[in-house]
Length: 154
Image 1 (cartoon, helix red, strand yellow):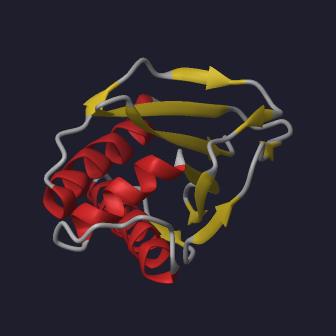
Image 2 (cartoon, rainbow, N blue to C red):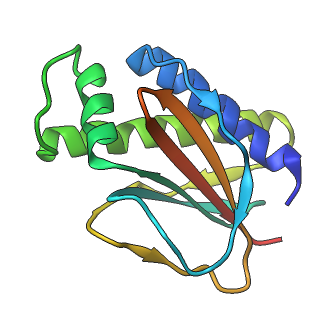
């Protein structure tokens, strides 16, 4: 997969996380995931159409999601992922992908994004047959990581 396609997702994720939560994310080691693979307890999936077809999945642990939701709600304590917290996490991913779509558009790569789908469960397994998945880990500090799995058809 072309690095030109990955960098806008990294740039948008770090920028929007900083704006919306104040969290300064650092980039972990990017790697390929072999299908099938297991995800965190929380996954938000956004589809891509246009010049890039595929999906972007944001995967994280429940405690990471509650921390992010708390920051997004002005520091209000978030003990569990109620509908408001789920909505905040979904909106964050929507903002990140909207920003990435703008960056890609400015590079001549027009894409559209689908509304985010929020999934929560134990031992979720993801299969992306015949398509490579690139994992971009963003380290949020205090042992928290958000994995961005980018799966795009060539």
